[in-house]
Image (cartoon, rainbow, N blue to C red; front, side, top):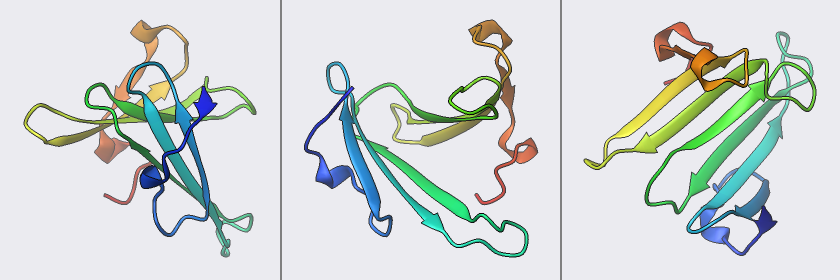
Length: 114
């Protein structure tokens, strides 16, 4: 995927940004920043935001447990349906096989701020 102009996809308040283009209308803005740590997280935090111009499909991000790999890990996918209602689903990914990816209800996942 190649970088393209898409500054309208940048999320304000996050200092790092890149725009990536895929096939068709797939344009993704990735914004992020590192926040200072505290007693519980000495290395700090990272804020990540994804924004797209896509008119269909979903947007997702995964957090792998092994450096440079998505599996095993956790993923979050979001989309807006035909009624303009937003949806978000968290997944546990222990396999590259779609049939073995487990949906995790948001209330049972590691997502604590809703």
